[in-house]
Length: 166
Image 1 (cartoon, helix red, strand yellow):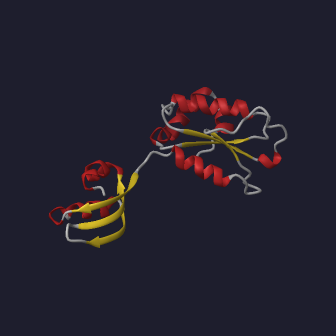
Image 2: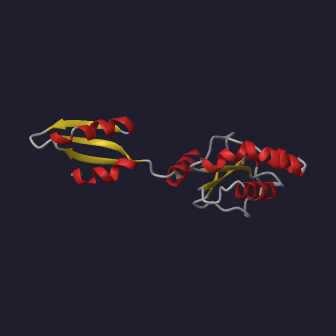
């Protein structure tokens, strides 16, 4: 989900802001929130504060957030903002910083699957079908002891599969 709200929300009367919040409530179900900011804007900090306040009111405090400082190419002084694990600098225009952005998104997203090498006994072959439903099998080999697989296993199933780990 991608939402650009700061300019709009800041100019709305309070009663309309309350009504507009209902359209943003899906943010509370997000895995990660990217707060894209125009680092060259003199109003950036005020806009960021409005966004933080609104996200808090929507119940998003526990969701990982990444501040994405865009327009690095147009920014003069960036001494007031520092890149860290929750802040990255990019220039969409010059296509700079996207590797770091993707790296940080990947690090902040919750784990949904785990790569595992498993030896599944033949009497438990149904488990391989469960792995196929929500995961991905990279390789599969039949041995005397069972099926040896290298798979991306859904996190909900990974603990159950650990007894077959090799």
